[in-house]
Amino acid sequence: MKTIKSILIAATLISASVVSTLSAQQAAQPAPKHEFKVAIGDSVMIKRECQKYCTGETPSTWVWDKVHTVRQLGTKRFPDGVLLMNIYSWMCEDCLIPVNGRASEAAKEAVEAQKEEREAFESGKPVEEPKPVEEPKPVEEPKPVEEPVKEDKPAEEPAPVVEPAPVEKPKTVVVYEQIKGDSVKSKQSFIGGYDRFTIGLRGGVSSLLHSSENGKWNVGGDVVLDLQYAHYWTKDGRPVDMGILTGVGIGYSQSSMKTGVNSFLPNVASGSYNINYTIKADEVKEHDGQLQLEIPLMFTLLHENGLFFNFGPRFMMPLYTPYKQNISNNENTYINAYIQETGVDVPNNAFLGALADKQEKGSDYGNKFTINIMLSAEIGYEWILKSGNSLGLGAYAGYSVYNSYKNDQANLNPLISVVTPPSDMQGAEIKVNPATKTFVTGLGFFDVGVKLAYHFNFPKKRQNKDSRLF
Image (cartoon, rainbow, N blue to C red):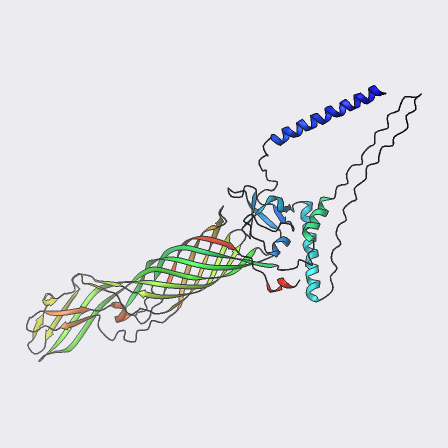
């Protein structure tokens, strides 16, 4: 008997030594590299006990009751972080509950139950709080019964006690409990929002839409730098975020108009003479430009798959309006004068600054500080970057529905006027006026082209007014 006890004691000491050695070896090994248990595109929910993003910010209360989609796994700053779609925030993987497969059915049941609780609360009916799921009580291991050893009989070893297998809680119940939780007590905001600042560059074709019976307008081009701010509202279960966009844009646009002149000015008094003028030019082309300031106020939609659409008014005002005018040089371009009293014809070459390749430049053709109200639209697609910001590419178009430019003096004065009349073959001086001031009764504007934008996304801890019900 003593020999058996000695053997048992020795075996126990050897086992303890082996266990301690293995534990030391395991402790010395480096921690394994994090391996994600979720994949991009998986549906997940956030555990209620997780109160912080990876960045340290506190989530809005509505995020715990929402099913999110995994957008990215890990980043240099957060190796074990998971980027969630829509909220653009990093959350540790340990704080996530997969809701694929059977768990997805439990999530749908939880959301439906939560919907019923919310409807009951809004109607004023009392809502019963869900009963907590009872954990199974641990099974106590039976104590071995020591039998007395009789001296005349060898001691019998007790029969081994089979430990009962631990009772596992069904996974679906765990998910349901995490999702549903204290959904009545935590009923706060089902609506959240975020902000974004955008730097954009757009360019394309444009025109001032010269309105004139004596000419036609041609297209030019424009380039605009946009600085914009937008706020988006999100809602549980809604794939499209809605928002309002405003900001400021500064840019330059230019277009042109073509016209001609064929004027007869009779009985122009010059001292004691009366002079008849004949002025003709087949082609007069004016290039009009403007440095413009724009202020948008647009309604914006952003789908969770990256598509965006902006629509609304854009207010535009020109700040500086340079122009350049060219008169073609050919056999049909001339200015002649006939002095009635002497019967003398004064030919084209007697005029100072005759119409051969005449160039006129100026900085004001009558369009300064007018107001343009335009209807504008933008559509495109954006890509989420690792930083949480996004890069967008799209197209834009705008058309003026109102322009305050009005010219009541159009067609009352000639395009080319005589400053100093000729006298007995003496030289004379002429002046070329802006074609816009001379012929155009009204202006407008349109533009169309492509836009490249970089979006800085800023999730905000905003709550609805109903978030303080409890």
